[in-house]
Image 1 (cartoon, helix red, strand yellow):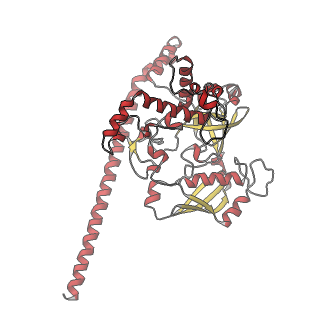
Image 2: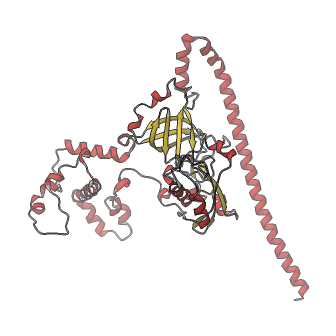
Image 3: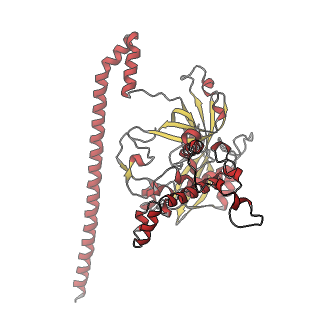
Length: 446
């Protein structure tokens, strides 16, 4: 074949490839345009419905404001309809000034710090509303996602930990929701007057807080509720258990030689109530679950007979008493999605360059009086900052788009009064520079 024909065929092949790429890009653009049009229509319809509701209730609200005698009834009616106007009780001052780099969950960065000052417009004496709260170690914070940028939302979202997979918005903690409300658990360090000092937060500075409530494990933890129910059942039940450890004094007390087998004294076996558990409560829980599992096998021996005749591969799915049903710890009290504990993306290794480590050690704790060096506003020193940076970067704070499609591997975020520069490699994140924030940026942190 002549060289000219070969070059023409090569050119045709390249043009065909370019045309196919252009078709795909055009298709993607059309999909984006269609999505934008649908979001725009949804936003318009929501605005129209809001205007309609305002027009419907305008006369009613005016009559309520003009007639004091009818005011309580009108307010009760609005409450029953769920149409209330929320008022922030205060605004968060946090070591995170912007969304970029802020941990998505509080457990990711337990060394992060923030404060909440109760607004004096809510109470004449704000400090009175905090009396007794110092008796609790943790509090729930109900806040508003005020930096969403838009009021649109979708029924399915792509959590960053799922790396692009879609799930329902109500099975995630996405900030883009019909009502942009957030809930987080923070550790209460101390209370000074009308100000709460917190740690382990995932909230940025300036976030409006709608309410706070004490965290009470007896009410909020499924494990505690289940243990309490089991202890009441044990106290009231008159059923004689053939597997009860109290019924085996001969095998448990007569042995005088050391043995690798587990032994329990009868007095300890009868003290399984929730209020009297000590450091060996986890071992007691496991023993109790094993005993219940063996008891079920004795009560239903026919299941074992049936399973011996079934072909391999089918018994695991049909036997309700298989080993997969024996669960320990938190799995016995609550269930969560598998991707929360085993996401398709793994944690990253975090390291510092020698220069970044030196720059970070120049920062002073928040209570330092030295004005010659940069000083943290919330963190108690470089060690706490290192722990916070490790927690943030190991969880990969980048979006799915930046993680999978963006070629720029540099990442910038702010922690307290430090500007952090890092880059992401394969399975690692490296901090390359730590500089003090500019004075104009400090107003965003306060």
